[in-house]
Every structure is written in C-alpha cells, then in structure tokens.
Length: 547
Image (cartoon, rainbow, N blue to C red; front, side, top):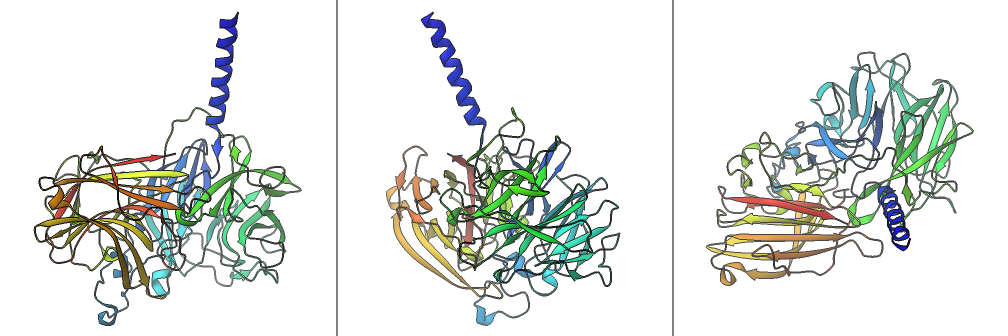
C-alpha cells in the first residue's frame, strides 16, 4: 500500500510539474520584439516585429500555441534606397558629402503591418526616415515564409496598419487618428479619402500610435497606445470603435497595467483562435533587453475587447492555446553547418552585409568573416552578425580561429548597442591582445552619422605572450535581465573551451537608448580592418542558453 501511495504521489507531482512547465510565462517573449502585429491563418499564428537597421528585416515568426515561436522568414533581405543602409561612409563627418551620409541606426524598418487577404500575405511598412527613404512599402507573398516581393510604394504612413474590409476595400490607418482609402490594386491613395477619425484628448500630449485595426461582429476596432500625463493615469492601450467607417468613433481604455516590476505597457494587437477565443499581445519597455512581449486573455465586455485578468492586469502565466507542440525559439545555437550556404533565420546583420565578405562554404562547419573595408571602429564595421539577448538570464559563447587576421584587425564578441560591452581580439604586428572595453557611440540626430566612439579599455591580456602556440580562443558573454539586477553583462574568455576566466567590467550595465539604436542589446560577432583588408576569422560555433 505504501508503495502504491508513493507511486501515486510521484505521478501527481509529475503531472503538476508538467502543468506548471507547460504554462506560458510572461513576458511571452522576453527579448526585443517591439511593435508587434499578429494574425492567424488556419491553425498558425504569425507575428511581425521591428528590427530597424538589422538585415534581413521585418522578421516573420510563427507559432501553433502562442508559446513556442520561431522565425520562419523575413519580408526583405536588404533595403537599398540609400548608401546609409550599407554603412558606406566611414570618413570623418566634416569630410562626408551627399544625401547618403550617415547610418540607419534606430531608423530603417518600423512597425510592420501583416495581413492575409484573398489567398495572399500582405505587409505594409514605412522606414522612419525623411524624404523618399521614408516612403511606405507594400509587400506580398504566397506564404508567410516568402518569397516576398514589393507590390507598391506610397507616401509615408507613420506606424500604419493595412486593413481590408469585408468587400475587399483596402484602407490604411496611421499616425494619430488618421486614415485613408487605397485603390483596389493597392498602388495609390483614393483622392479625397484622407481624414481624421478621432481627435486625441487634452491630456494625451504624446502621439497615439502603433495603430492596429480589426473587424469583429460588424464593428471596426482601432487599437492604439496612448501616452497621458494626468495624475493617476499611465501609458495605456486604448480602443476606438464604430459601426460605420465614416461615422462617429467611441473610445475606451482596454489595458492600463504595470507588470513584473516594470512600468505600464501598451502597443500591440489582439488575435482570435479557431474556436473563437481571443488573446492580446502587447509590448513592455524593459531596459537593456529591449521591448518584450506579453500575452493576456481578452474578455469581450459590452462589446469592448478588455485585456488582462479579471482585475484588468497582465497575468504572470497563461495557459497555452494548444498543448504538446514542439519547443522552438527565436534565438538559437549554431554550429554553422552548411544549409544551402545560408545562415539560420535567427541571425541578422548590422546594416546590409557585404555578400562576398562572408562564407559558410569556404571552410565547411565554420562561419568565415572577411574584412572588406578599412573602418575606424565597431559601429562602422560591415558584416557584424547579431542575435537577440533574452531574459531572465542568458549566455552566449563563440569559438574563433584567429590565425588569418592581419595587422590592425579587430575581431570578437559584444553585448552590442549604443553603449556596448566588447571583447576584442586585436592583432598588432605579429602579436595578439584580448581587450574588454566599454564603448559608447555618438550619432547626429538627423543623419545618424557616427561622430565619435568613446572607448574605455578596462582590461587587456597579451595573448601571444601568455599563449604563444594558440590560434583559437573562446569568448563568452552572459546577460542578467531580472528585475533589480541592472541588466548586467559579464565577460569571459577561455583558451580551451573548458576553463573560463572572467575579464573586464563586472556586471556591466546594458542600456536602452531610444535616441540612438532604439533596440535591446544583441550578441554580436564582428571582424573589421583598421589598416588593410584581406584578413579573416573562422567562427567554429555559437553556443546559447537561456534560463
């Protein structure tokens, strides 16, 4: 009997643990996934997000259960409207000339809208730029994975959403309460259709933006983030609704909730399941990790989609929509095995890559990064390869064969942002040095041109002197984004991949700065030349874990 009771207890404990483990813990995606739009096609949810200056851009993520997400494609491989996208200008600012001067740090692709209509996927996005660089793109594809093609270019629409009415009439909702009708072929704006459908309240002195529009039971719903400055009111998600697009819209606050020790959150959308349940996906600013996604149930009350639990708060956990789905992730390890000579979809380049300066084929099982132009610093280096960092804690490491670096080359691994913690392997003559440094970039407000990089070398090691026969080094960075832990990064190196030594700043604080990068910190692998091109490194693997 005792043995039977013990067995039953173990089964109950296992079932209980399995139930807890199966829960979706908020943040649903504890990584930089801002400005989400989410749709469902059949049994699959698709999500797009903003990645600005990273290429390929406008990542499309998919999930069957709203818990396990993976990147299945990108809407474009690169943007080519300006040399800014190529990091081409490395001269001092006073020597630079022409409209292409600068970079697209914090600019590029913003707030993509994703729709499925008439058997096709549609995406609308507008880079946050002035002039023709900021024109709106409309892309289309037969499936979410692509291939995507440019369908049309229109005037700039800020934080816009594409919307197809029941009869197929297309509209764009954008800015703070603006809308217009598009031609049926989505190639022009219908003359005279531009108008404001609401006026913001007196205390909403910030923009109402991030518009997402759905239609449910014959009613149109426009969801927007609202910034208010009145006592007792906070950043919130508001909803406008109407039965008639040309009629009067009424308004309600559908979410006003802090969460997890951080301030109030908003901006996102709602999506239904095949069975008719609804979920809300909103982002929250969380410092160095960036803007993370939360998941909430939606309760329809008096015809309004109210987000959160019975108290209107974002819950700590949510039951997955569907159980038993395989575990997938948007950040992943990589041994760089050749798959059609293409990188895994979890990787993005900083600005457009130089295609002939990287390879998976020249040394199978390795990523080769070649120097392609002489540049003064990391922030102008081409072919820096990135992945997101994640909370609550994460760790990433790489193994580099540096035997083919040239004098003046700098290669390594960084917690990359406007303020970066950097592990740099430098070749000086015939000698190699490893340095941990803190680097801070200064950008012009308009052009995002790099005017200065302040580099503080915290710790340096003479690799050639200490390890004269070595040509391989392992570098590791950990990130701790738990509340109260100050978004701490720590840095390590190893000469054998087993024994690790910490180096440089302990608990380096990663920062989010909307005036420069406007994104969360990234793991970044880099290699650039400061004297002459022709050198290269081979990266054996990227190992990643998150807890």
